[in-house]
Image (cartoon, rainbow over all chains, first blue to last red; front, side):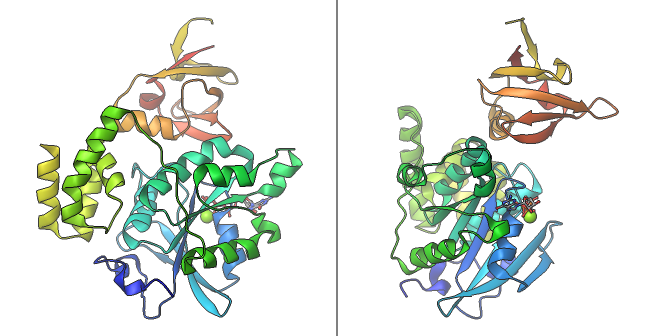
Length: 258
Length: 77
Ligand SMILES: Nc1nc2c(ncn2[C@@H]2O[C@H](COP(=O)(O)OP(=O)(O)OP(=O)(O)O)[C@@H](O)[C@H]2O)c(=O)[nH]1
Ligand SMILES: [Mg+2]
């Protein structure tokens, strides 16, 4: 297998209540509230789940496992959010998990009947990681409402896999597992088409990235960190301090915010 | 167009068209993330007993906004 799970960074997954004794790939389920994440979680894991609390946070978290092709996967059900900008505890939990626990795959669960509002989250996750799959859930509802979705085109436009599902009827679950497996084994390589901002902003991003790279290396998406710094996202800086070498981060933010 | 008012003053059970967000930085971003993008038609649902917050149907999701947020959203009807 191409990936070594221990080498994914200095951040310990222990911070997230995930003990990585075995080399189980971690799959995160993210998405807007009420899109069927927990239903999908149950469809994937059956009864193999544990609900626990995030250390220091009051947001419940479910973890479970499933086996596909003799391989065991750990699934984490994240709280539903409209955004990953850490405006609420839920957003902070989801953001920190995707950003710092670095799941091997993040599945963004989307409500097929209101995609426009849901795709905002997809674009945000794509800025953090390229290991993303869109799960077009509630596809049965979309069919009932005569909403037709060109999944091929959506997948090409976003540059990542798109899988329609109806989690409640277990429709599409097998294909979702199969695609997840292919992504992890490197058979599928997503190439997210990221949002391009105007020239002035892109220049600023490039400039910041050149300063961030020597400090954080390839640990995190430098583009995303640069964007957050341009937003003056002080919460992200304190999160970085929690998970990384405090001294380095202080140095970076001092230089960058100057 | 029946004049421009902020979202907090739009009556219940009516629709409003978002024209702009009168805020900057994180607040602006948050409102946009909730789906309050100019051009969006929003339905005002019920008010809570104290009149704040108010529930809105924004792009297929019911979302409650406080006055300090909704008063920063410019609409036309
Ligand atoms: N028709 C249909 N209903 C579904 C499907 N998936 C989930 N649901 C229903 O949608 C509702 C919400 O599902 P949840 O799994 O609780 O959604 P969630 O994303 O976990 O919600 P939050 O944790 O609150 O963000 C439930 O009533 C489910 O039964 C689906 O594929 N088709
Ligand atoms: Mg849930």
